[in-house]
Image (cartoon, rainbow, N blue to C red; front, side, top):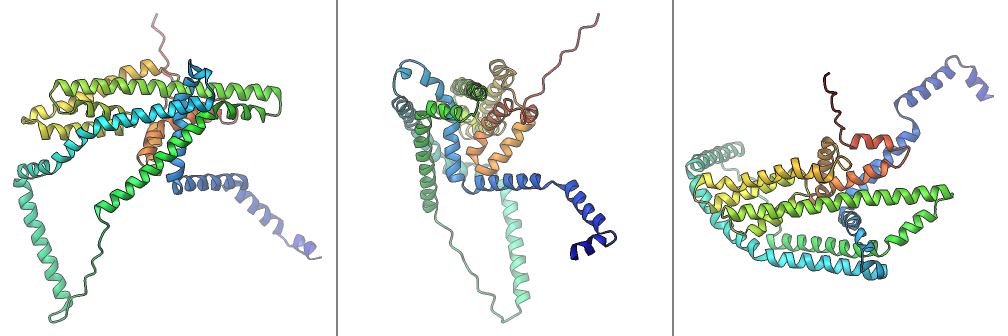
Length: 384
């Protein structure tokens, strides 16, 4: 009876329909749920970055070493044994690199205090007036504070909060980095050891034979594209590091091996990495070169090597197949750098490659891969 009365109310049906139309015009319930799920996913990635970042890094790096499992003599070994050989070799290379670079890094660390004093001496003409202005401003602030408290009234008790010592913060940082490295290497081993098993499981859960073949083709194409991109970029970065090291050696900058290794590692971060490398070599030039004009040579050669790599070598080796929209690369670096810090900036481009390769093989998501891919240049026809 109550329902009939409600239905007989003038405008009730129109009001309910208008509410449905307004809700549907703003956002469908399914769309709202998907949006909230994406927000929850990103919040989880940000909150659990200490665990998820090394795990995802291991997955990305596994694409770099997966082709080695099919080469002799590793293809004749069981997957766990081949994975162990790859991981222990990687550990040895990392340990050897750290051992070789330990002395140059400590040498530059010892130069920092004397370099700061020398820099202060050179800029004393500028800093002394600024210090005097700051001292006068502090005196005026103290006078204003005493006037506000009134004569004879004690000033409020100052609470001093002691910050954690540098040693404690360094120990905390070392513990976090060590834990992340342990998670990375252990999970990398398990990913490599179960690569073929997980591929077979993914194909097996497909319901039909046509779906199984499609899943096998998608996995093979994605693996080939991502591994090809990572291998090409790694070889290019090694060549870039060698070129930078030779240039620093030619102009007389101390520890050229250190700068070559830094250039190789920093080049994994597009845009930001070369800028950091130029700044570091510029500071090193100011500290070691007596002539200010000569101090500009290290960043200039660093820029020249990166310019040749980015404009000539990279497009030639990578080609149009792996090219990505520059705007999407920048947004990815900003977003993942904000989410996971330095490791997020390093993984920004590989994440885009994985998304592009995955979406291009899925019918419903294929249109989104168009936004990630670089724009294809169309050549104009020649005039008659």
